Length: 110
Image (tube, rainbow, N blue to C red; front, top):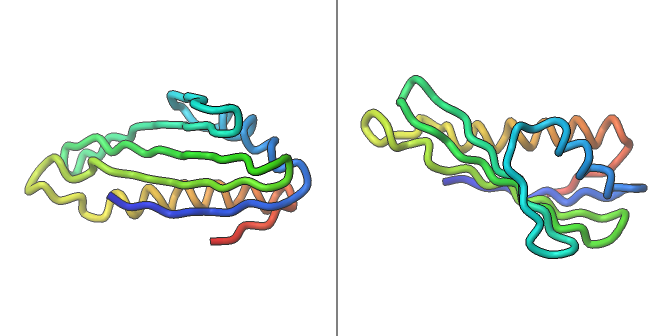
């Protein structure tokens, strides 16, 4: 399992929810008024496993958001090795979020 936290700041950061909802094939959940969870799976042929990624967004206010990205389960296939799949998926999602932020003029911290 691997994880990463991003802190996004900027004008109208709450719009990131719409952007992620439209961009990611996922299952989503809202367990609290300011917390949103997006879950997705990706199949890896090289080790015959499904990797699950989870994004947990906590909206601090309209202009501040904390995003936790967690991926796991990529090592259930051949030799029980993930071959770095969790880390790769976390970085891939983080890069996609960073691109969205750059396009919107939002700041991203770690």
